[in-house]
Image (cartoon, rainbow over all chains, first blue to last red; front, side, top):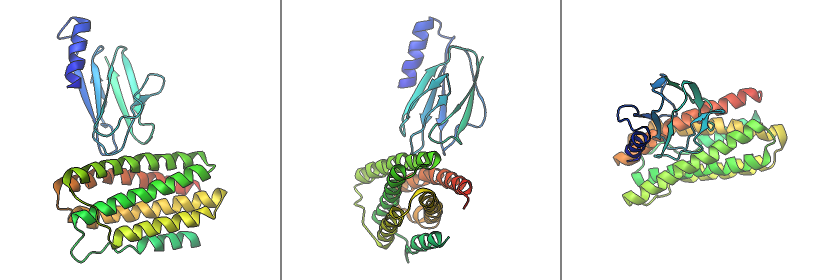
Length: 101
Length: 170
């Protein structure tokens, strides 16, 4: 529902249906995906917390979700190209990477 | 070392061996109690420790085990299961109370070490119970699923506690 809304908003803002899409990243088993997730500039990334404990998605100096409760999501539109390493500040062993092209 | 042995002995006492395996209401009580005792220990450590990392670990235990218990509580309500205390949940509670009483007598580095040693032993013990008793015995699929989802959090906690234990010079 939320991602549909995010897509609708992205489409409305850019005015180009093909330009932006939404990517969902699952947080499961106290881990982010091991592989780098590549997205295009303007895409929206939604992290879904499937774990039983809260997590954060935090790229220092770039973005910080704050606590994402179990079963909840955090979405972020990726406006700037680059490679973003992020962690969960609660469980610093959890590391992920997003590449914005 | 002596304190650690005592704490491990206290934790080892729980009769995790059920003749027939615990029922779902008993499992619910074990899950809730196991989480609650670690929240309580975390609160004490957060207020008593002066070590930044120990305090951060304690906060993580409070946050995570509170979150797990909220979901366990929600599920139990949804399923209409009434948690039923049993030998295991009661000895977990007793072990938790005795741990708190022992920790309250300690200060500084001795406190940190005893708290972290107990966290390592506690998480090992609970993981053992999850694998050998709780998951195999759970009848309701959602209850079993919740325990399976809790497992990686306990593994992460155990790793974190062991890392701290090494730093504190166990």
